[in-house]
Length: 132
Image (cartoon, rainbow, N blue to C red; front, side, top):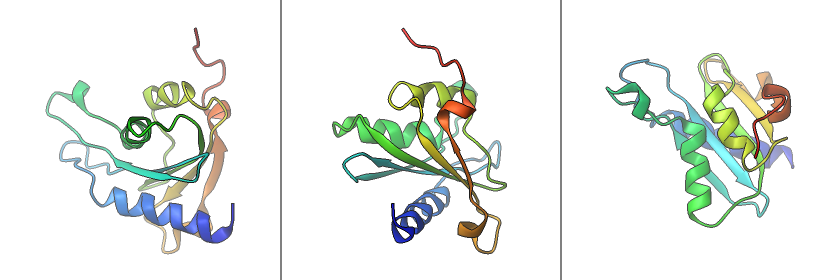
């Protein structure tokens, strides 16, 4: 992936973060998921007063991709204040499709977030994934 493509995905995740609905946690998350075909899907977290009904940005992007028939993912970019990794539920959810998915964690509070990206992957974040 070129630096330009990488920058574009970071910008998609940062833009999605701006649309997050997080009145309870005040923790806005944006995600950009690139498929193996090159398509990009974004998502943001949408909270609910009944916390269990909240949907995370990573799952929003994944379900949008799956709804169009995409099942193979090549990169996930997550934008948060502080550059946080996905929650445990999202890690397991993502492992259904890409057990070793590369993930870029972007700290949206940085002046130039592209310079401070933390690169990881799903296998490191979720070793010994549950699978049938």
